[in-house]
Amino acid sequence: MKLIFHWLIATLAILIAAYIVPGVTITLVGALIAAVVLGALNLLVRPILLILTLPITIVTLGLFSLVINALLVMLAAVLVPGFSVAGFWTAFLFALVLAVVNWVFHLWNRS
Image (cartoon, rainbow, N blue to C red; front, side, top):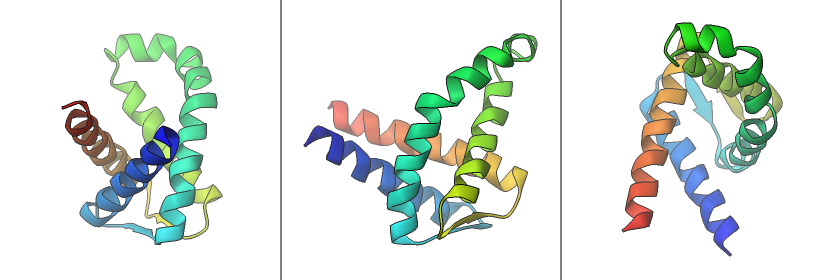
């Protein structure tokens, strides 16, 4: 039950971020699938990318991880039908907004 709740919260966060960021289009079904795909990419691919790019991440004081997030959003947009991102900077902004919306939802869930 908890897993379904987190999946629905992630879907809602994706829909809100897509509404806020111009250049991102997504359908409801696309958001449901994108929540699973982004979760899987963050679980499986992101740690590998973080290890491979550790030197540049250290030099940029961790800011390069934002680039990795944007690239993962672009990859998810390629994999998920009904989800499209206009370009890198749109994906970058979408990833930032998505992180903030997720953070707010997790703060709300804790209390």
